[in-house]
Every structure is written in structure tokens, then in C-alpha cells.
Length: 222
Ligand code: AMP
Image 1 (cartoon, helix red, strand yellow):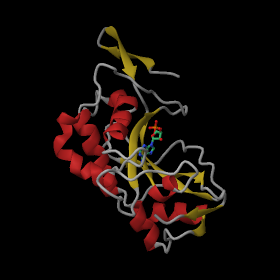
Image 2 (cartoon, rainbow, N blue to C red):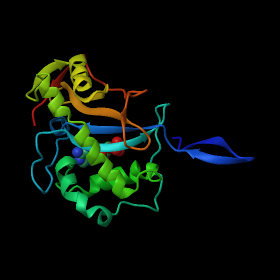
Image 3 (cartoon, protein in one colour):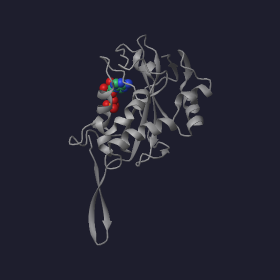
Image 4 (cartoon, rainbow, N blue to C red):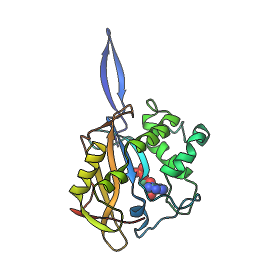
């Protein structure tokens, strides 16, 4: 795993070594129905069953060559006291579904410690979580899909139609990944958008994740 690519930058008469930490972010949202109806199943958060909406998975620094930095700063671990005023929005927009049932701290800590620390020079902990919440508002996937007549009710849709609906509704081409439900059906699991290295603007992706999707995929209910 590459942690960072050093690049040389000339500053005045002196060469300055500068770390090029990552090339773009993936902003990833997850369909809870697809997390839950696999063989592994899921547990609802202690705050109750989440809304039937896409939930945030995370904001992930990535390199143009497909690799990504991870676990960049063990000296800056997740500290919920820094983001206490964001937690109620995170409970709604970033629900944990892992078992045993829990309050989400473990999932948010994992995302900060693994991914967030690799962009901490751009987004500190507060800004990282706030940016995720802001991006979620800009990327209302469920609304974009419903506008195109694509409903989470167990129907199969063409992958191209799903991609086009997101592109029309949000303005950017998404990456789409699939997983397999307990009966073996390929289904819509996560949707990726690309974000500039400041975390402020959606951009077109130069690289998409390997989605493992069939040409027709199920949009399961939740
Ligand atoms: P990452 O390491 O950021 O790629 O995320 C993958 C990890 O996040 C795996 O351990 C997943 O089980 C976990 N994960 C994904 N979605 C959720 C969720 N909604 N709630 C809790 N854990 C999750």
C-alpha cells in the first residue's frame, strides 16, 4: 500500500519536498437494504431503524492509480467530544448497521481513523464530519432515482438507467457497486461520487470502483 507519493516542488532557489497526499476523494453512500439483506444480515442502531434512505459510508482520499492511503495518523484518533453538535445529524444521515446493535461511534471512528486521518491537513475532524453531512445534502440519490421512476421495492433495473438517473439528478456520473443478497441476487449496494481535494466541490471521476454489478440489478426495499 502506497501511503504518499513525494513530489518535488521548486520554491525560489530552494527545492522543497512536498507530500502529495492524495488525488481526489470518493464520497460513498450506501443503500441500507443492500447491507441488511445479505447472509451476514445487520443490526439497527440503538436509536432505532434508520429512514429508508441512502446513508453515508464515508469520504475516502484516493490516488489516481486506484490505490489509497489508510490509517495515516494514529496520534489523532477519533474524538467524539470534538463533534458533539454533529452527532444527532450523523445518527440520521450516517447510520450504523453492524452487529451487535450500537450507537454508531464504532463506524464513525473507523471512517475517521482509516480515511479521515489521511486528509487531516485539509479537513480536521470537525470539518471531515461536517463535509460528509454537506455532501449528503448535495447528493440526494433517492430523490434522483425516484424522479426517474426507480423505486426501492425489489424491482430489477438496468445499471445504465440507474447511472443515467443519478447523472441527471446530481450532475455527475456515479460509480455504482453491487453486492449479493441471501438468495443470490445482484443488487445496488453503494454509490460513489468524486470530490476535489478540498472536499468542497463534486467533480467528474477519472476512475471508478470495480462495481461487480450485472447489467440488470435489484433495488431492494428497506
Ligand atoms: P471501509 O473500511 O471504510 O471500506 O469500510 C468497510 C467497513 O465498514 C467494513 O468493516 C464494513 O462492515 C463497515 N461498514 C460498512 N457499512 C457499515 C454500516 N452501515 N454500519 C457499520 N459498519 C459498516
